[in-house]
Each structure stands twice: as structure tokens, then as C-alpha cells.
Amino acid sequence: MSRVQVRQGEKIYDIPVQPGESLLSALRRAGFSLPAACGGRGRCGKCRVQVNGGPRLACKVFPRGGEQVALPETVSGVILGDTLPPPPCQPGRTGLSAAVDLGTTTVVVKLYDRTHGAELAAQGAWNAQAPYGADVISRIQHTLDTPQGFSELSGRIRGQIWAMLEAALSAAGRQAEELKEISVAGNTVMESLFAGKSVAGMAAAPFRPDSLFFGPEGTGDLNGVPVRLLPCVAGYVGGDITAGLMASGLGEKPGEHLFLDIGTNGEMAMGGKGGFSCCAVASGPAFEGAGIQCGMPGVDGAVSHVRYDRGFLYDVIGDGPARGLCGSGLVDLAAVLRKLGIIAPGGRLLPPEEVAPELRRYVERDGDGNGLFHLTPQVYLTAGDVRNLQLAKAAVAAGIQVLSQRRGVPLEQVDGLYLAGGFGTYIDPGSAMAIGMLPPVLAGKVRPLGNTALAGAAALALDGRLWPKVEDTARGCDYIELSGQPDFTRVFTENMGF
Image (cartoon, rainbow, N blue to C red; front, side, top):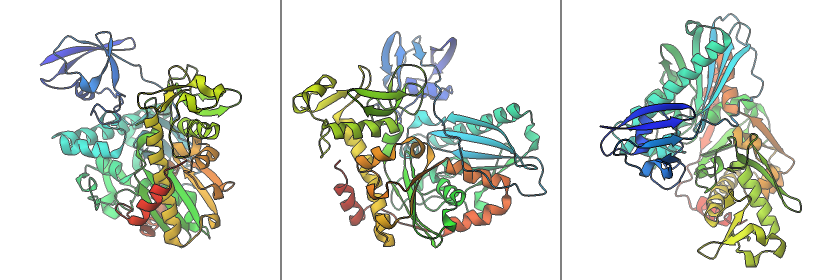
């Protein structure tokens, strides 16, 4: 067994590497969380590190021993912990409860006093499974391809959540013995990995999970503390959606309401007091920054918003220079470029000779005759990026249209469009409508809700009497499986253009 020296900031580590093992794999085993959106298959370019002074992809390096590896320092960024106001706490209880939003990209923990309902502490972090892929499909594949893959993913997320709980307890000056229950909301894959249940059934149609976490199947423990997982609707409509529908109160409203939670997966529901129809679309991880050459999550250095006023203006998360595009910045940039004619209606990124003279300094020609747009010298948009955005936004738009058709409710008659999660909070709805992702007829009816998965988990942590309600919410959802359906394929194709 060989060893490599790893430097991260001022710290130096000596880690072992097994024969034939990639550097990415060795870093994973050593506990480093290095982004690898494609799961280490050499396609995304996100696991770039310095090896012996030169830039390399960690998944493509197979150390022989003695290599010097420099990792980027851990970055901070936008992890959404804002929620709808939680309900009053259930009377007569003591001790502490915790609520967990177990997202594919981020994890948020909140600690509550069950006597008074006060929030005592909160912790947010990037999901420690990131080195295994940006989306749940990559992580499912890792469990199938690697003998220890499932235990790696399950152990890593359970360990991360417990560490976050310990940090929250420490911040609140409380003891682990006071923690009486943990409520966890996540998509079906993430909840399954946490619970130690196989995800193999969700790798292919008909996408059946081992459990939907109703009743006793939704219970477990973490280091001896009782855990309850939010009930799921189907393999790709999870407890994060049932938590959001309950916390938002949409199930108690008359009329028709559209609820969207768009991240690495696109989950959506339409309905109200009489129940919901719901579906999931494979929007891919483009909205989380993966699959985009200069894409990145909402961390320091990410361009979050773009506009044009005699030049391109943009906002950057943190105080440093622009390093890439997060999802909201990508959508803004595409909308601006479409308006300026740099992106054609069909989605082609035009070369410099085909755009307005005053804009040509931003564009160069790529090797295939398309344009390559530079927002800054380091941050650019390629024709392939635009194509990946088209696929993602067309999937979302098509899912919305299928829900509308199945419920027999024209989109102009929908009473409200509710956007959940980080992407829904920071996206400019006007830009999303301009590129054909959200229906323009709902302009003026858009309401961001914040982290509704966490809001639902918090409500259940504070009032255990709500568990039957959230299970009824899940049972009241009519799931539509879109894969292989001609009507979805048709409207998906129709929505590819800008």
C-alpha cells in the first residue's frame, strides 16, 4: 500500500492508497468531501486538484506513492435554512427534538426545545456524499458498482448528521441524553440510504423502493436516539415533498395550486384540498451547477444573478471574484443571452459573426462552429452548457404541463405557483419564464416558500400529533410515472426551445 501527502489550507495529512485505487477513492475513504458530480467517471471535471504542482482530475490519478496533493479549502456558501413558521409545540413534552432536511446537495439540522418550542441551534453543510456523485442516480449506481458502495454512502450520511447534531447540541449547551427524537425529511433515495434500505429497486423502471416509510417502517434510530422518517409517495417523490405540502398548508386550500421543488431532481405536485397529483422529472443536476463547464453550487465565488445594462452586470456570492455559475445565475444568463440574440430560439449559442457588433467581444467561436460566451475571462458558457440547460428546463416545463392536463386545469386557472427549496428561493421567476421553464401565465402568482422540507420536519419535531396528517398527505397524492409516456415525451420535445 502506497501513501500520498495531502495539503488542505495549513493542514497536512498522510493518507494510504490501495493498489490500483484512484486518488478520488482514496480521498473519499480518508473522509475528504471533494466534488465529483459524475461520480468519478471522468466526465464532469469537478474533482480537479493539484498533484505535484499540476492540475489533475482526482478520479483519473492512480498514485504510485509519494505524490503531493493540494486540495481547495472548504468553502462556505448559501445553504437554505429559512423555513415557514413552525406550529406551536405539543404540550406536556420535555427534552429536545431535532429536525433534519436531508437533501441531495445540502443537509440542514435544527434543534428545538420541546417544552417551549424554541429553536436552540442550527447547522448546515454540504452533503458528505458529494464525492460519489451530484445526483441520486450517480449514488445509486455507486451502490451497484462497488461492493462496499452502499455501506459507504449510508455510513457517511449517518455520520455527518450525527456530527451536525453534536455541533448543534454543543452550540446550545445541551447534552445528547436530552435528545428524544429526530425527524428526517428527504427524497426517497436519501431516506433509504439513511435508513440502510437498498436503493437498487430505484435504478430502473418501475422504480420501486424497499419502503415508503409509513408507520413502523419509518422508524429507526441514530446512535440510540429514535428517528422518524417522513413518508414518501413513490421512488422519486419523497418525504421532502410530503413535508412541504403539509408545512405549506396547500392541502387545506380550495382551488388548484402548483408546488415545485427543483434541485437535482424536479419534484412537483398540483392540487389542493381535494388531494394532489404529483410527478418527478429527471431535470438532472444542471440547476445545482453540475453538467455545466463553469457550474458550481451556491458557494463563495458563484455568480448568482446576471443582468445587462450597456454591459453585463452580475452578483457574486461572497466577497471574492467570480469563479463559476450556480443555478440561478445560469438561468439569468441564459435569459439575458436569449433576449440579446446571442442564444437563438432553438438554443444554439451563436458565434461572434452572427451576434450584434457591440456584443462580439464577449463571444468566441468554438471548434464546432458555435459560440462560446465569456461573462468574465474565467466564467464562460458553452454550447453544451446551453444544451444541458435546455434538457433540464424542458423536463420541468413538460412535467408542469402533464400535471395540468391530467387534472384538467388550464395553467391560467392555477391559483398559485409555490417554489420550495434553495433554487426556488433564489431563482428569478421572470428569467425562468423567459427561457420557457415556468409558465408565463402564472406571472404574479409566484411565491417562494423557503426550505419546506425542513419546515415539515420541524413541525413534526415540535408536535408528534401531526404524523397522521403527513401520512394522510402522502396517501392523498396520485403519483404519475412519466417515464415512457408518449404525452410527456411530446411536450418535453415541444419545450426544448427558448
